Length: 229
Image 1 (tube, rainbow, N blue to C red):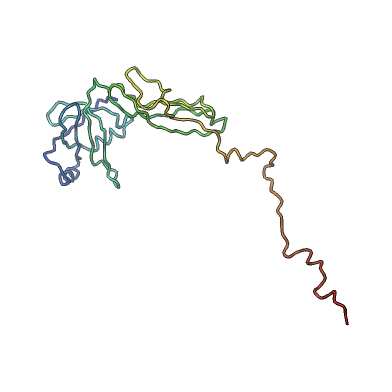
Image 2: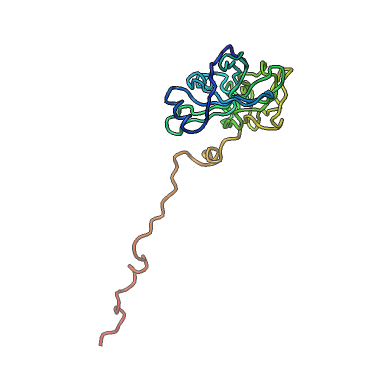
């Protein structure tokens, strides 16, 4: 989705770990811009501006303008990024130049709406299988998300990628049979909670074995059948 955002960038005269460390200390981070048949360009950008874009509602599908030095701004989007494993701060991003007249492939989030009747009444379980779906479309037509209404779904029913309503410029690249969300029957342990003929709270009689054998108690003392002399 195209946004009216412009991020300023400066050319990086050199590369390497030392240069990247120096940039981060100064509050910038290294990035690379490539695509549309032009040579890749190493630049430095403000990580806060890029991070704000990545955490927006359109995320990495956001198309924004980047102005490198005095050159005219051109549309780009973030296609890869690296975070610090502990601090979580951005360390590096790859930016792809975008031709607004050519279709591109993107992964669009899937948002679930409503409460399925199979869950609410049937006691089923809703399982979200795929939270994104891949499509191809013109850059300006990238949707923020696809909304899937599950209200009418019953047990063993679901929504597949092929069920999505796509705009004219959109083409589905994910397999049409890919399940996005479905409602499964109650789990075995839940279904077994109600057993025909069983009484709630009933406890089976406990069989208690007494120590020793009862027949031993009735037996005559040892040597009691001996005749007196």
